[in-house]
Image (cartoon, rainbow, N blue to C red; front, side, top):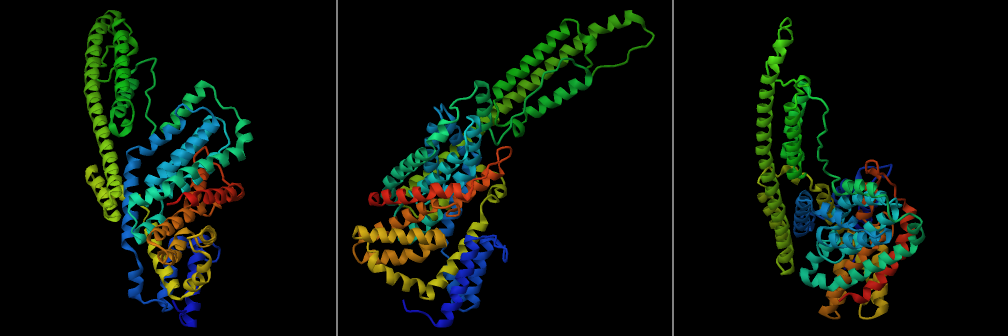
Length: 547
């Protein structure tokens, strides 16, 4: 492609530079507007500077990519509501055999969940689990946070829905989901294993210096924290006396606890047994003659002040009978409500099973080669209908700012492409980056690695994807597919180089910093001294395995 006019080249470069600064440094002091607004600013400048026309700007927006991204985000929202990630968190601590075993589990679970549910989602929901398990075992958090973020990036490379740049590659290359998976899966598993080995090597002494096990009581408490960090089932306290106010308070507490909204995720059968036992104890106390300490609110409280002891003695038996009847009525009501709660629990189990089946159906459809965007959107809408209530709370959890960021980025990158600068740079590099020999693959990987950390991975894919594929297609169709997969592998693993290399790293850092009572700051240098060797070694080992 020939270079555009000098004016267009200069103005287009300025617009792209502003977009790049906003994307890489979203809180710069002179313009702290963030990534999303920065991408829209870059797109607007491309049109205002007449680098591209408004019609070309609209045409640059890739709707299939946006549809696929939206669908996968909605599916992830409903999977989180169905406790999928809660179960993944439980797997981290189930029968753990020490810090090294825990670190390897985090690497494996983070990689697999990222391949299926996107790396950003996995990092959002698993970070607090990792922090709590580290606290449970009295371990330093940063090796495990690094394991979570880096394995999420590596694992997400295996599927088109694992991360945004893979979405772009899958749509532009038209590589079927199954072939994409088979092409990168061996490199992904080996990369995760090597990454875990590097972490163990770097932090072996640190992990050995902390005790592997904890007091059994503390372990139980921590287990409860980890497995129920989003829900806190209410507990009913034990009363030693029973005056009228306490009894009313107890009835209200029992009624509230029986509500599915309050204790929908607790053990209803166990709660019902506790309530039955409680009421039986009170009946025994009533029948044993301790009614003088009880004041039931629905009883008559009129006792004559001058009636003497004989009248009081006559009143006690009648009160005892009324108390027994009241307590039996309470017991019957609680049994009825308990059945309703159990029924509600079964309905939730059925709903969660349907959510998992729809998600599995989506994955099977993708493996069969159906249109990825419409498959994801169909699965998302099926979950909305299955939920059978206003979808607004769930849809509000979708990151619309990310979708808008993509729209602005598509326009900005398309405008920069029309300046001719990327084509000129690629024409210079192309003779050295042919993928039919080892040296060419190494050069191509180095270019992708550097650009992914300078311009971010998605813009790198948009800038290089078509050119790399066209160059490889001149060799063979198989080499074209391999070029796309190399681009997916290297641009994704490149995110592990530094803390700002990928959104997943930043999410783990921010989530760890904000976690209540568990806040931990993952520093840039702590990440860099691990990220550089891990990225270079994992990238190099994975390249020969890509087919």
